[in-house]
Image (tube, rainbow, N blue to C red; front, side, top):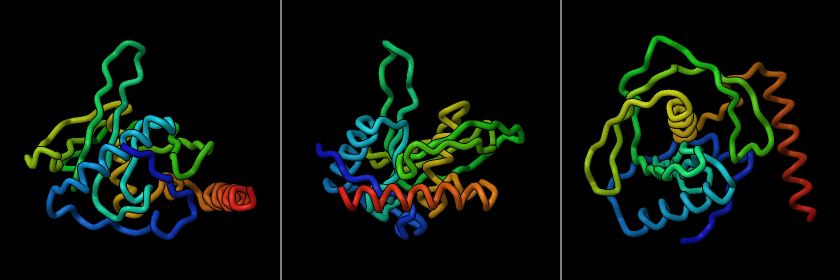
Length: 173
């Protein structure tokens, strides 16, 4: 396993729709392991392949945060929301590609998602709470959408300028 570099917004790859996974390879399994290691190290609760520069429809997540509770790392390939609740929920979202920036985003409170697992089987699960927010946020990444795209233009531009400044500072360092 190896940590991958997380792309920082603005980067055109973060606005690109990812390609479906067509076969499960050792390379894909390694990518999933690397992404989980990168996500836990960041630390974060979700990471999509485009965030590490791989344009495949693959995401990892683990929203277990309780001390002493077993982690629940999940790898979802070609995930698709198959049902959403009418009830909405607002969470303060952040993103590993937009460090130290947070904003309230409203999304369906519950979703059902179908995906291909590393075992080659189709899976389906209903998510609520933080898990529902996380899976929707990560699927957005696969569609070239960032959480700041839900914000008003002025707030979005302000965050984008902060990220451009951060990238310039990192480049100089």
